[in-house]
Image 1: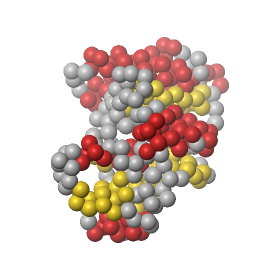
Image 2: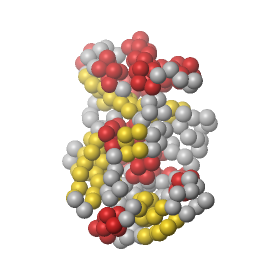
Image 3: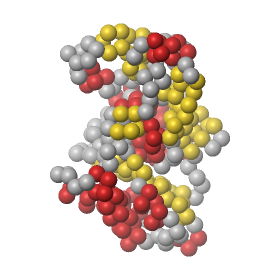
Image 4: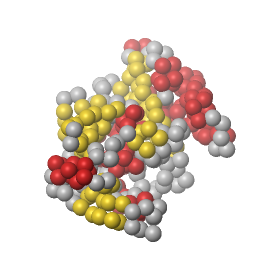
Length: 281
């Protein structure tokens, strides 16, 4: 049963914050996940952020700031994103269907906190931070800390997500974002992987960032892989071993489950492929 107790569409952030402080509202933007949530049967109050002008992409020195109300299509087509956060642009371009990408927003994808959220692994390799606002003022929190469990975040009921800030793509780095689904289009991710590596002289990896979705309870960086790659010489064998380390990390953190026999070899192969693409060979 769908039970909407109240619906408001504020026109300023201050008004939205006051509304959220006074009662427990669920912020909505594109509303692409709204009906499944409403079918859970609990009464809810909806706060539409569509009038708050949160659909922007800005260059803030070493950061790119993306408004919470920016659609996946706007992000995918943005030159600023392509030049500085290419994996975020690619991830947003693979979300759902054209209709979903045209309506769904980055803030909503993050706030929903699905383990298979396509944008999150890509955001994590750019050290993404979430900017929130409430009566108490603004605060920023690392995306890795913001999502605390499947469909659970550290957003307080009186807080509104304003924007997402990502550190710019460093020069001389390569990257890859891969998504595995049941079919080639309009699919929910079964597994995704984002990788950025910086290669210096003599093919030595100076730094690496690797994250995965639908692998751990929440989308996460894989520090064990990043550490083993840093300082090592690029080679197919190194990337194969990195895949094995990623799988070992998955089992250590999530345990052996019914899906492990499938996920283990797939994660090994996906990691190896992403790193190979990021290295440019």
